[in-house]
Every structure is written in structure tokens, then in C-alpha cells.
Image (cartoon, rainbow, N blue to C red; front, side, top):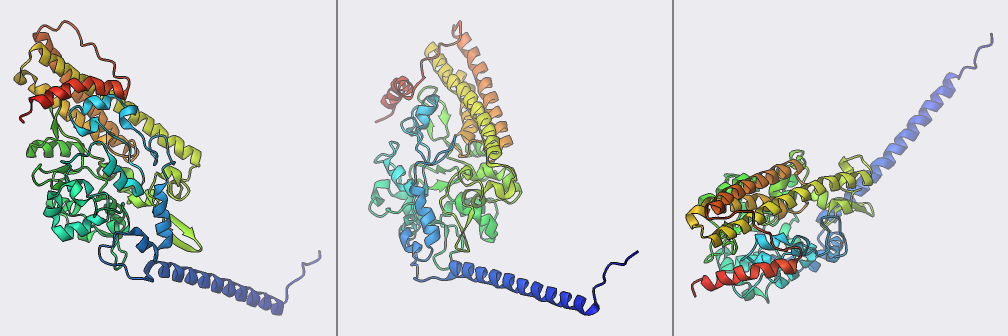
Length: 468
């Protein structure tokens, strides 16, 4: 049997030598490339070509040093992007959900309630809303412009809150931008609004000890939270977080401080309006549990010319799935979108069911009033309709249509429905005691115009009864 040819020792040594040399050369190229990319990224982060002044609110001046971030921020002016339940296109919530008009009867949100657009439009939208009047406080500017920290430093925080919206028309001119979230000296993420730090202080937490990853959500939490104005004299901005961030914690908080935004024109119930508790709901979800920040999904990293930077076109992750969702979820874009819409469709269904029960309760209390029911008889039902609406609004006013914490949103909406049905049962007994023989006949509230026409007599009567 013939033997296979053997490689000589000298040839084998040569092969090993050249193989090692080739490996060393490849590793050298890799190290050089990595070093070059790191140097480029480092330069892009810290090399300031021009100084940025304190309280600089002109975003274009920051853009001189950070053109990629600025260009992506400027893209938030795009108002044509939309997903099934979000995006930057304006959506009239009152037209989409006419029963909302009934639920906010006697309050500004029954006049005008639109979806948020990109950060570029924040100042335009708050200035143009029909909810604004000569009585609107300057506090309403708080989350809309990087001019606000300068004015707070100039006039004091209490002084700023104490002014009227129109007092600052000429001084608040720049929309949400760089100075809202970044230090002009180091570009580190910062908290520029006092209400968030104050809310953490009351909980015994030191926000200054937050990690960089935590700051990638807390910078958003300066604005994407629920809040209220402490009283009509000070108009101090306060986050109702003393008991925690859950819907039940909000309910306990408002009960304790005895606060209400308005008295409902139809039912006479004392009502609270929640404002987009996005950070609160996110905090109860799986992404927060796994340490995923708001920015990871809504401001994903991008690469351009070998430089990695954060995309400042803050928008739905469904519009950037390859850089956001698919970093963790190894599914196709089709599967991701199907999963998200499945959750959001179910949330929308629960919201509609809760809205129907709550609106009906407001109308049934009004019928009981017409039948002669007293305030004492209606007190329990009014408290229940107020409570049910807080739970509904906890989800309804937040962005994301439940996707930030699906199970928590479903639980909260189930509780809202249950509370509303308890109220309807109680008021049905009151109505029966005053001679009602059947359920009330619901009016035609199929459109925004019809709903607004329906509530107008109630709103007018309430206004006429108020002391002059």
C-alpha cells in the first residue's frame, strides 16, 4: 500500500510562519480600523468648534458642532409620518372619539384635543391650541421650549409660573431642542426642569445619582409625564408622584390633596385630567425592567461615515425597526408590526369600552339630577365616575396605545370599566327612587360637532351659575 506524501519540516515551518504573519497583519489592520473609528467617534462627541453659551436656546447654534444630531432633530418638522395609532400627522382626538367631548364637558379638552406632532412643532401647537386664553399661565410653556430654563433663571421658578402665557410671547421662540436635555459645556444629559427633581426629592430619591442609561429616560421624563398646576394663584407645576407612579397612586394622591381640575358640566362630578403619563407607564413595563431606555427605542443609534450617533428625530420605533426593535427582537419587520398592532388593537377596544361606560354614567347622573336627585344621593356615583375616568385617562392620554406596558394598561382599563359599572348600578337605584322606569335614551353623539352641540347647554348653564 502506498503512503501519502509527507510535508517536510522546513515547508511546514514556512507555512506556520507565513500563517502567523498573515494573522498578525490582519489583527493589525483590525486594531487600526477600530482605533480610527474610536478616534472619529471621540472627536464627534467632544470636539467643540465653537463655544455654546449658557442657556443657548437656538438649536442651529448647537448644530454647528453637532451637524448630524441637528439634522436629525430638524427632521422632526416632518408631519407626514404615521403609524396606525401614532406618528407625526395631526389627529383630532375629538373627531376620532366623539364621546371624549362628553367626558371633558366644561373643560378645555372638549374644545380642542389633538395628537402631538414632532418636537419641532411643540411651541407652534401649544400657542395655537383653542384651549389657550388670556388666563393661560406661563407654566404651559414649561415643556415646550429651551427658552424656559433661561426665563426661570431670570425671573425665578415661582416668578416664571406666576406670569401669564402671553407675557412671554416674544421671549419664548425656540421649540424643544438641545438645551432641554444637554449641558452646553460637556453635552452630558441633564435635568433642566425643576418639577422632575422635586418629584424625586419628595420620594426621597437623589436624581443626581442616576446613571447615564437612566438619564436616557429621565431626560424624556421632564415632559412625558402627568402633572397638574398646584393652584390657580401660583400655577406651580407638580408631578403627582408622592405615592408612586401607578394609577392607584395617582388616585390616592389627588384624594389626599383634594385637587380637581374642573367640575363636570353634565354630571357635576369633581374631575381630574391626567396628562400623558408616558414615563409612568413605561416604568411598569418589561423594557424598563430590562434596562431599555426611552432613547434606545425612540432615538436609536445610527452610523454615518464610520461615526455612531443618536438619531434625534424622536419618533415611533415602527419607523426605525432595524435600528430599534430588531436590535433585540430577532423577528421580521412584518412580524414586529403585527405583534405591536395586535396589542394596540386590544388596548383600543378596552379604551372604547371604558369610555362608553364612563360617558353613560355622566349622562345617567344628569338624568338623576333632572329627576330631582340630591347632591347627597349622587355623591357616591360622582366619586366613582371621577375615579373611573382617572383610570381611563391614565391609558388614554399616554402615547403608545398601551405598547409600553400592555398588561398594566389592560389591568387599569379593566378596573376603569368595573368602577364605572359600579357607578351606573348606584345611580340606577337613585333614578328608580325618583320614578325612572327605564334606562335613559342616549343622544346621537356620532360626530364631534354633534357631541359639542349636545354639551353646550350644560356648559352654558354652568357658566351662567358661576359667581360673577
